[in-house]
Amino acid sequence: MGRRPLPRDDDGCGWWRLLPPPSPARRLEAEMTADCVVIGAGFTGLATAWQLARRKPDWRIVVVEAQR
Image (cartoon, rainbow, N blue to C red; front, side, top):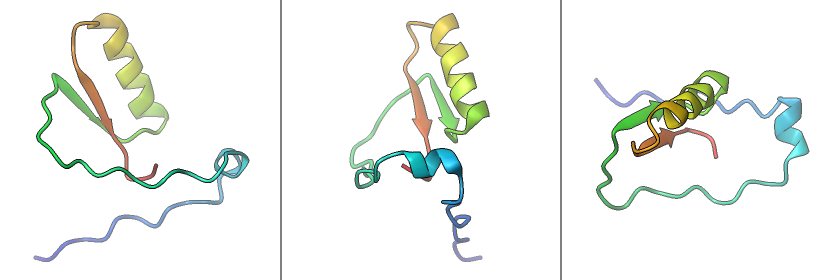
Protein backbone atom coordinates (compact mmCIF):
# COMPACT_ATOMS: atom_id res chain seq x y z
CA MET A 1 0.00 0.00 0.00
CA GLY A 2 1.46 3.39 -1.01
CA ARG A 3 1.20 6.72 0.69
CA ARG A 4 -2.16 8.37 0.75
CA PRO A 5 -2.23 12.10 -0.08
CA LEU A 6 -3.31 14.59 2.55
CA PRO A 7 -6.71 16.19 2.06
CA ARG A 8 -6.64 19.30 -0.09
CA ASP A 9 -6.26 22.48 1.99
CA ASP A 10 -9.48 24.41 2.35
CA ASP A 11 -8.50 28.01 1.65
CA GLY A 12 -12.17 28.97 1.31
CA CYS A 13 -12.46 29.67 5.04
CA GLY A 14 -13.14 33.35 5.73
CA TRP A 15 -10.90 33.36 8.80
CA TRP A 16 -8.01 31.94 6.77
CA ARG A 17 -8.37 34.75 4.21
CA LEU A 18 -8.18 37.44 6.92
CA LEU A 19 -4.71 36.31 7.99
CA PRO A 20 -1.46 37.40 6.36
CA PRO A 21 0.24 34.77 4.17
CA PRO A 22 1.64 31.94 6.31
CA SER A 23 5.35 31.53 6.86
CA PRO A 24 6.97 28.46 5.28
CA ALA A 25 6.26 25.18 7.03
CA ARG A 26 8.84 24.01 9.54
CA ARG A 27 10.06 20.44 9.33
CA LEU A 28 10.74 18.34 12.37
CA GLU A 29 14.42 17.55 11.90
CA ALA A 30 15.30 16.10 15.29
CA GLU A 31 13.79 13.72 17.78
CA MET A 32 11.26 15.25 20.11
CA THR A 33 9.66 13.91 23.25
CA ALA A 34 6.26 14.85 24.60
CA ASP A 35 3.83 13.72 27.25
CA CYS A 36 0.97 14.17 24.81
CA VAL A 37 0.71 14.77 21.05
CA VAL A 38 -2.48 16.33 19.69
CA ILE A 39 -3.03 15.67 15.99
CA GLY A 40 -4.83 18.56 14.31
CA ALA A 41 -5.10 22.22 15.26
CA GLY A 42 -8.78 22.66 14.50
CA PHE A 43 -11.27 23.69 17.15
CA THR A 44 -11.21 20.28 18.83
CA GLY A 45 -7.43 19.86 18.74
CA LEU A 46 -6.71 23.33 20.11
CA ALA A 47 -9.38 23.00 22.80
CA THR A 48 -7.91 19.65 23.82
CA ALA A 49 -4.35 21.04 23.95
CA TRP A 50 -5.55 24.06 25.94
CA GLN A 51 -7.40 21.94 28.49
CA LEU A 52 -4.42 19.61 28.85
CA ALA A 53 -2.11 22.59 29.39
CA ARG A 54 -4.44 23.94 32.09
CA ARG A 55 -4.80 20.60 33.87
CA LYS A 56 -1.25 19.30 33.38
CA PRO A 57 1.01 22.39 33.42
CA ASP A 58 4.14 20.26 33.83
CA TRP A 59 3.41 18.22 30.66
CA ARG A 60 5.08 18.89 27.34
CA ILE A 61 2.22 19.05 24.83
CA VAL A 62 2.88 19.08 21.08
CA VAL A 63 0.27 20.01 18.46
CA VAL A 64 0.85 18.66 14.93
CA GLU A 65 -1.06 20.26 12.06
CA ALA A 66 -1.05 19.63 8.29
CA GLN A 67 -1.64 23.30 7.53
CA ARG A 68 0.51 26.08 8.92
